[in-house]
Length: 357
Picture: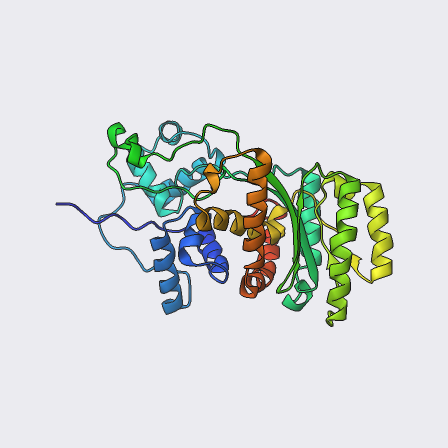
């Protein structure tokens, strides 16, 4: 008799992440970001809404082969060396149970083997700066976050589709490599396009396509042509105050750029936010870039196989990205701004280290 699959049990940290993201994304997207089945996300949020707390109900069934003390020891051992194989963990803990039992005990604590996420490697100095920044902004209201002009650059590649191709197949090599189940790789080089953009509150700002390396001269000229007129329009429309945010990329942080920005800030009446290095998880523009790259391949499935010269492909990319940018609804921007207190809270909880955003 086939038994139904055991429901994945969430850790307290995972529960907190799901609740925080539930204000921003649908259940399926939350599951994708946290690498948790969306059905588990939906079931937890339904229980959370009914019970108004994150606690699980008591379990019934056959007693475990391991004691509570054994389980704590197993968890500590797994967390002390997260990359060790299960076989090695079994030898090190020597609890007299199988690898499968160890796996089940860890799963009950919300611990399983996952692909390691890629995040910036932070130095102690950067961790301290992030924590300081978070403490300075912990009491900011959503209205204050609406005064920030968020900016960033990204590289968009026509052959990079961030969406995984999911297929139905049996677990064997014959079906794994069946042509209908394979996502083809293109045999030509494709092209990429550098893009800079910004937004403030629920208003999209200018989007700029950069066809050269971004030097400090290129960056200053770009801001002079696009950012400064945008700021003047915002003030003319009644914006009370404006703070410009940028990361610490070399063209942004050069003495020449800083001096130019400080001078223009005095002329145009805006201030410049001090930004902690290596902190893309604090910039909501990162979520907009992810949105644009997903929509590029969703709305234009042929993007990854565009043919022609690099200039021809870049021209098509520009047209498509431009349309996707200006189609972004104000509710998307508003949700990003409303999420900023959660970003700050996550940095505080992580003591300045990397977060799930």
